[in-house]
Length: 171
Image (cartoon, rainbow, N blue to C red; front, side, top):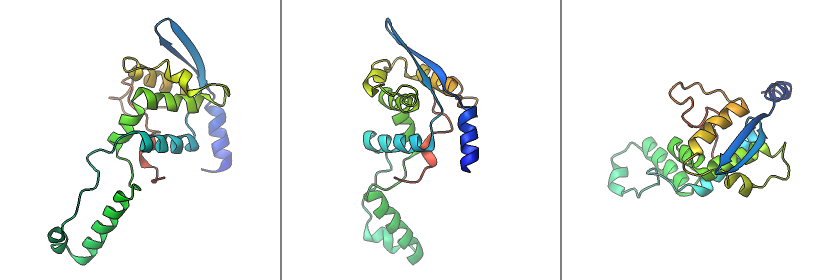
C-alpha cells in the first residue's frame, strides 16, 4: 500500500470510543484500527505468551526419511529445522488463543489506544478485562475501531477480526 493510500485509510479510520466496564468501574478509550506495526507487535506478544499447540515439532526417524524422495526429504528437514528453531508461523488457533485471552485482548486495545492516550498503562486496560467479558470486549473493540468482520458467524461473537496477523511472516 502506498504512503498516500495508507494515510487516507488512517484519516478515514478515525479513532472511535470503546467503553470498558468491570464491576462498578467504567473507562472509555479512543481506539483506532491496528496498524501493521501493531499487528507485528501482537504477533510477537502471542509468540512469547501462548504455549505452542500440537504443531510443536516431533522427532523424525531415519526410517521415515528413507521412504521419501530426496527433494521431499529436503523439504521435511528444512521445515523441521525451522520449527525447531522457533521460527515457524503461528497457527490460527494459537493466534486466536492469544488474542481471545484477557491479556491478549488487553494488549491489542492498549496498542490501539496509546496514540490517543499516551499515559495509558497496559495494566489499566488489563484490569478491566476478564474471562467473563473478553468476548464482548473484542466485539466492541471491532466496532469502535471500525474493523469490518467478513465472517457472518463471527459477527458479535468476539472472534478476532480479519486483521489478525495470522498471515504475517514469522518475526
